[in-house]
Length: 200
Image 1 (cartoon, rainbow, N blue to C red):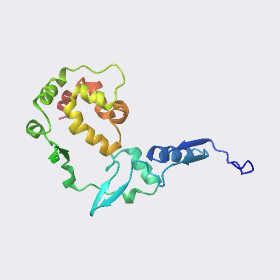
Image 2 (spheres, rainbow, N blue to C red; image 1 turned 30 degrees about the horizontal axis):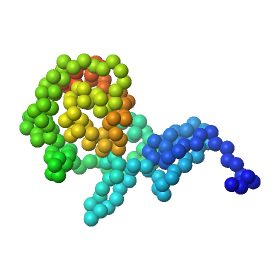
Image 3 (cartoon, rainbow, N blue to C red; image 1 turned 135 degrees about the vertical axis):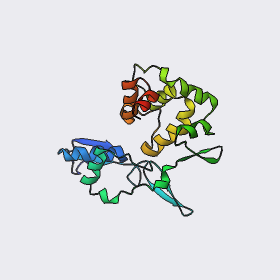
Image 4 (tube, rainbow, N blue to C red; image 1 turned 30 degrees about the vertical axis):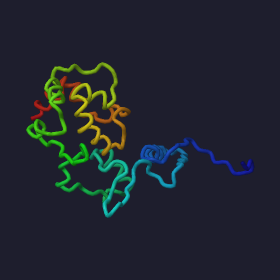
């Protein structure tokens, strides 16, 4: 190490140039902080990235964005609003791979009852949902969904969604922070099903 090398003063040193590191750096810089971001990989973006394999585009991390006011403001500040692409209506039909075959996620209660994704036990757990009491402590998304809807719904409906939107592990994401509207449905109505019926 060269002790004569010029030293750079920074207010914050961020380790990792994934979305979290880049976002934190951007917001700190906006507030006048001197920031340095260190990244071990040869590119920024962390889990976010796209590759083309055999003519197909494959997303390495999240493949969609949830439209929020904060996201719209950030995209506008970064002059990226024009780069967003609306999902094709055909893409509303979502599929997961089960036993090596694509299976459509149910789009309505009737499809839910006949879906090969969920067992009879999963459906019985779902039927009990209105009588399951809210948790008294902070829960991960996985704990929240497992308690309210059962393991099958976590494995085949929620985990693919969380992976697609957050590129994260539902066991490590806070339900209150990551899915605040669904969390609020339980807090306000005591049940997701009752909340859904109340909103009809």
